[in-house]
Length: 203
Ligand code: SF4
Image (tube, rainbow, N blue to C red; front, side):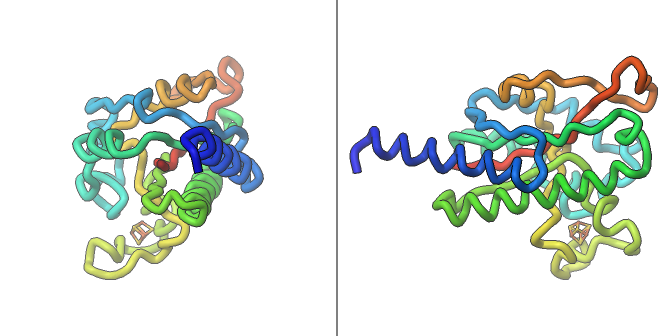
């Protein structure tokens, strides 16, 4: 196979992964060059107490993940990422229902990761917004991994993207999307839609 065929073949596989992400529930998916993904230490710091009440409670969150140091290294080892988002009305993002959608987000990135492996991207690694403790193990006293056991949801739960300091706004811009900042004080009337975001490193 010549260089042109290899590049075409890779493009085709990436496009198929984007389509699968949308088929499985993402509102949009796009391939982004990892050179355009930005890591910001300040964003990883937001995972700490008191900003995040589940800090340290799962293997997918700081300080149990490699954080910004590991992500900067990973970004040099991968060429592409499939960025994906689920558009969500702001009033849902600010309510308890959001955890159901975070679950869907994790399930989609995990499924895209698996599909990427099957398409030859054997090192594919998925990340998603939100803490898996809150999303999958809220009714459990602890994260089993932190006590030496297996993850209760290995096919669904993925590490928190925030814990690695990914600049989600820049990621969305690189994907060609606009981001609306949603905080506890955001008015759903003024900013009616937000999004949950994940990404899968491939290539
Ligand atoms: S056991 Fe639960 S909290 Fe721990 S990594 Fe798995 S999903 Fe996350």
